[in-house]
Length: 392
Image (cartoon, rainbow, N blue to C red; front, side, top):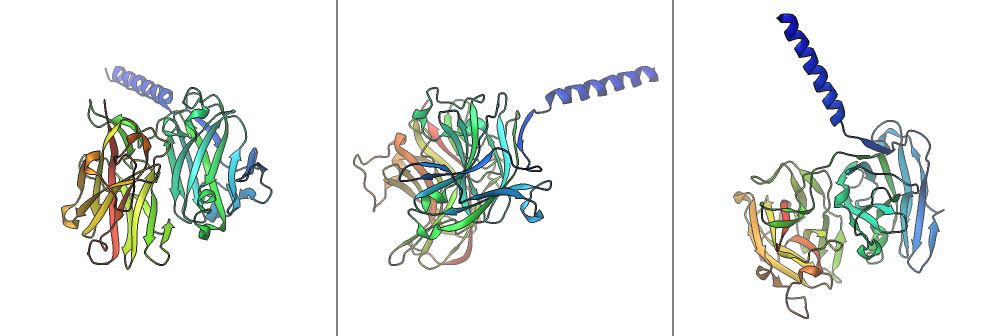
């Protein structure tokens, strides 16, 4: 009897190991930079027209331990952010991603910025994800491939990323675009990349079409359940002239969340001082929100204050809702119909209503000082469960 039980246990263990092996996710490893570079190029596009290989930028394998996430090497890309030229790093070789569901890589930036990670189909659209990076820290990028959005939807006849037609992987610093409006961004920068791979295992769903309940569809702006930060910190200083800033306060994923809201949220830390006002924004310009009917968002502050929840159209028209938050109340969940959002006093709109098809971005800003509140050395604002409800 003991032998029989022993044989059964061995068979069960063997079967379990076999099933585990079958369930193990498949991977397409792109590069770990342990050997010499192959296929990577620095490219540039002139805003006046033309472009090609960028001989002014430098790519190399970095061996310094401080610039390597795993193993003994990473890719180092040094480039200038300057008006009139868009620079990008690209792996110019076909990658068959049939069966793959997610992309994971590590990136570190010398300057706080946002990067666009793109997969380009051969002769068609580029499907992208934007990632905000702090200066000098390794940032994990983990996204589902079906969360990527096309740079121009009209470029791709079937409107979806064809995994067997990917011809290149691209990394672009959005500073190349923003420097035309914010000249102070001009600088020489370096990016480091490491451990780039695709997996047949899906990452946590953090953005895209989903459901609030079994019957209510929604576009999930963000639930912050992955390490990816998609929100950009912004500030406005009322000086002469007024000064608009980006990336001058830290944003990070934090282990805090409202009840039934998952395990993580976005943490935004900033000073409430003088005539400078801080906020965070998420660009949604390339997403189809034409069926949206309202906005849900959960907020939590460490210091009592007055905040604006805003939705902006592509033409710059801004609709907003003023919200009072108290630190002692913890998380506060708002469900705002578009009728609850008022056109900003300094904004104009020809038809006087929020057009869902024209939604460009969503934002949250601290306006406590304008509303007559006091200053604070440090405010921690947390966001979670940001979504647009959709018409059935």
